[in-house]
Image 1 (cartoon, rainbow, N blue to C red):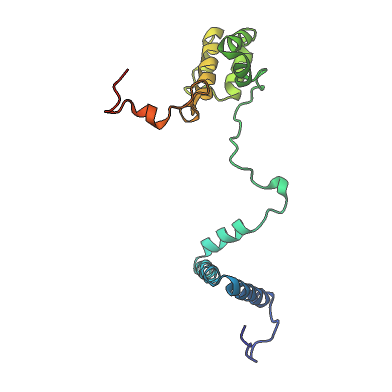
Image 2 (tube, rainbow, N blue to C red):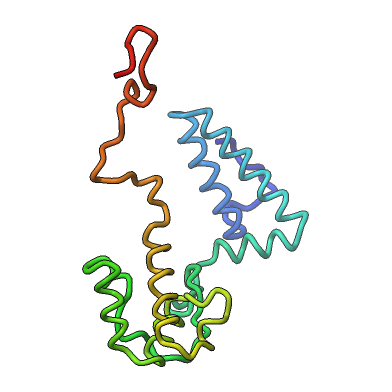
Length: 183
């Protein structure tokens, strides 16, 4: 680190002290990894230059780097707010389906009244076309719940594979070769 000129006092501001600390840290890093130290110095220079040039960027940077005062008031991760004022469903149709299959789910749903079925539709966002909440026939609502549960449960199944059938080996998937006659 270079000697400071006589025109600047040693500790004139907290900012200058922090700049000196950063300079020393970069110099230490440069001794063990000069490439990383140079890259980090360039990144910091670009960020500081842009923050000095653009007040909007400076505000956004300050907001991003400032921890919230109270963790309870911090913004929550992308959790979809519930718009419904309905009661939560009395059963979890996904858990029932996983345990007992379609027949068991239909049986459990058949024990519920229309409003309880609508609660399940609302809680799990199963009214994509905004029609199911208007239906008067409980069997129609049950069909919607079962259809949505099956659909969401099967989503991504192509990537998971079927456990009862092992994936074919590459040679088997290609089919017979010229040397091997088809059986």
